[in-house]
Length: 507
Image (cartoon, rainbow, N blue to C red; front, side, top):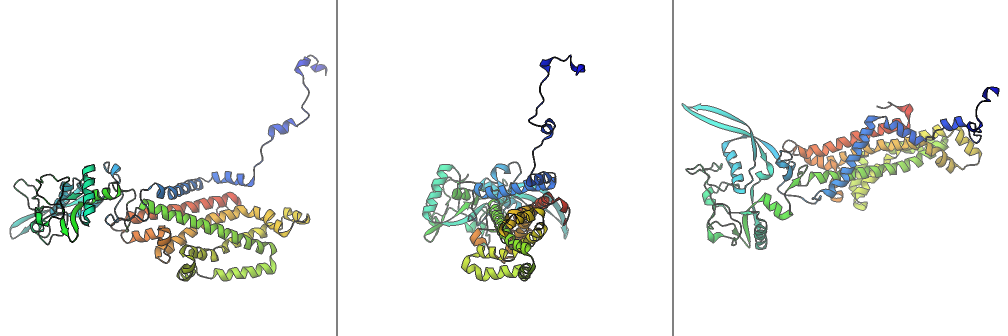
């Protein structure tokens, strides 16, 4: 005390007795089981990336059908298996509706340029390559050129023949006068182009049935438009093409209707109020793939989630009874599960679709097929967890205090098994999606009438035209692959997070 006698009293204070100072400095907030699992999950970078991808895919499935101007019932009879195209991006060479055409001769190239000259929309985007070949026959040298070109498939359609009522004809004329967009083009005289020429895009004089054009002294195509007023279907009082002095006719009589040549690109604008906008192209039914993939994916995700929740509920109850009571109860219930697990899933799904679907609907019968045996793996997993925990001290203590079997099962044991069961659900979802997609791809189950489409149906449709229109198969398959890979990585991450001791098992 003498050593500290020189310290002033105002600098001294009583020690805090209400709490331990050392403990207050080192005290930390407690962390629960799920919070601890979340920390472990975040350390798995591949699983976090998979979770982000799954979120983006789900957002796409929800928003794509909403923001697309098309519905699943919108089908265009001309734009079938057409590549991605938007008018806004076509100018920069992105989503320009381009396809390659190999070995195009000069007649075919002239045909494409002629479409552009008449409609103002040249299908030829660029000439990729040209091949010049020279042949000698009896001393005469013949030179031929073939081209590899990239064309805009939407412009390539050009002009098509349409039969319409007089009222529709007048509506189109009114539309032309209001917008300045020409839809109807002059009628072509069959005498000038020849009866054997079938293409409605040949508006010029040709020398043979192959469509070889005839040029004037200036190297220009010679128009073959009809001026036969006696054959005119209806009077035309709207936009005329360049060079028309008022003598060309724009329709021909066809019974009580009129037949005319329409630029399909502009006719599409007239019918729909917008230019074609197919971000991912169209399929074999003329549907917009962007919205169709979203609709198919939305069904797959919702269906897989519903199946997983139902199987979790049934499997958890069934497995809890097995694992808790054990003995004879476990033996009997396990044999029932063995019998059901021996039933081939494809056979069950096929029988349900053939017979049960007529009474309850295709989707409900499809759901029954998945639930009939799908809960067995979840029951086995729950049974294993109950055998693991039912002998623990906290369960014995609760039983000593008089807790009922129901409370022991679902208030003490089941919550400790929940992490493993949730992980099992996450791994079940991709297997359900695979099975659903496989059955619709093979045509065993047809969901088109009730859902609109599915990923399996879209891939099946795309397979038939994969060589000429690869996008119709590529985009649905790409979405399907990303979804499965991401769910598997995500499920593995959950498994390692909730059960660290099982890390790497089954990889």
